[in-house]
Image 1 (spheres, rainbow, N blue to C red):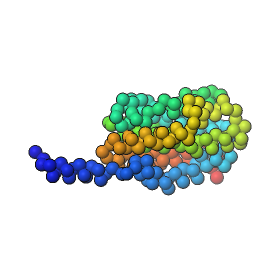
Image 2 (image 1 turned 135 degrees about the vertical axis):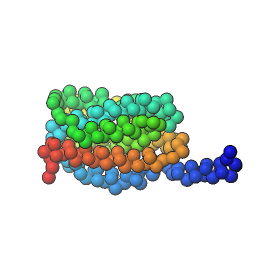
Image 3 (image 1 turned 60 degrees about the vertical axis):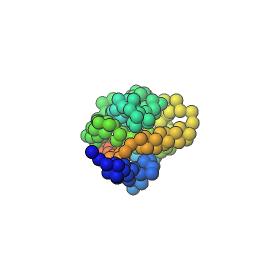
Image 4 (image 1 turned 90 degrees about the vertical axis):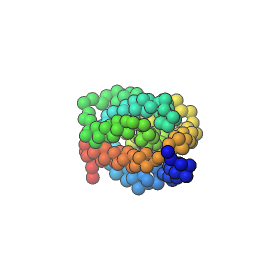
Length: 227
């Protein structure tokens, strides 16, 4: 049997693997990747007002399975003490994406290999404890609630899109987005406090950004916007 000293040592070692803030740790790990994500690929084109309706539709087509998979995996862990803390149905985007694609009359758009790789990574994140899903929710949903709101305004102006084609960026069940973001960050922190080890989640945040960047760059090429 382990004596009290050994048990205390193991407990202290576990604490040393837990950052003071999971959110801050993910933010620091992905800081450079965040800049790259905003400055390259189809996201950069949209932010500069250089997108097209076809490019926007192609983006939605490739994000649809990403969100469908993320939502399904999160719901599968809804009753768990860690991942379950961040499941919010009002954040789900797949139905909104389908509505936008129908409004844009987008048909026969290709699903790129980078989107398939992204979906596979989310499936893997949802296996076992599902804790790495926190990183994907952090990357996608907080991005949609922040930078996504800027993209929505740019798309409405540059592509003259009606609100019916921008449902992806509309959170109709959230009355106060800034306040909701604060609550969601708190939920992520509470989930972090309920975990004993964080390295895998922090690294998964970097992976999520890398997958986003790869997909964005591939979409830029596929839409004929490169260069």
